[in-house]
Image (tube, rainbow, N blue to C red; front, side, top):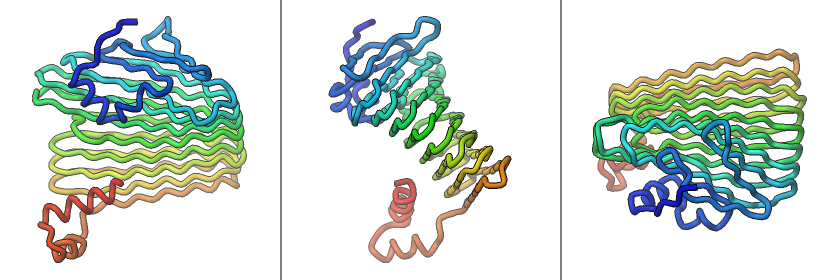
Length: 310
């Protein structure tokens, strides 16, 4: 594996998508400009480079408890399109935290793009908390494009909690999350997105509840400003006795456009599926109340948005 030194610009990107100081304390793999540059494995977590496509396989032994695994990606090369396939094989009754995400720095005129396909295979009783952040920066007019795909396959009694955030600076993103759930499983997704300028963001959730007592809870909170566009699509299929709750809450400002499309299909009489969507501007009385405490209108709006996305 190539061993490049981490530069100051790299540290800044890593700090925006994870805690840079914490990365090397456990198993990790750092990818930069389409190549792995640093890696460490542990007694319970092994990381192997794929031979057929670009990417890695991460193997967590059964009964592994409370390990933290970092797999960040950074891009500083303008004009690069990076596609990576990362597969996570989580052993029976394990309980781990996986921290991923991508940061792009683009100071030039060509587009920089990262398409990360992450597939999670959880054995019986396994638990995973998956944290993913996306961030873009740079003074160039080249676009910063991120298209993450997450596929989750849960065996009986397993669960995955996914916390996803698009912080800022991403010009275009299509975010796909797919799930296939067996009996007594739970898939929880929390998404936060902010867009401005002419940025676009599309989110697609596609979850199949195939086992008895499988459940999912999908929450998307977003803020769209300026002339940005957002689209939220939620597809949930209840194929057994199961429970699902999908909700989309969006704040819209300026000339932005937000669309929410629920698709829930009950293929079993005992499937309990719920979808909620709310899109609107910040209430004037909220801003007025904060302004009476000494905040400017802009400060009041920022406080409301920060609280909404917390």
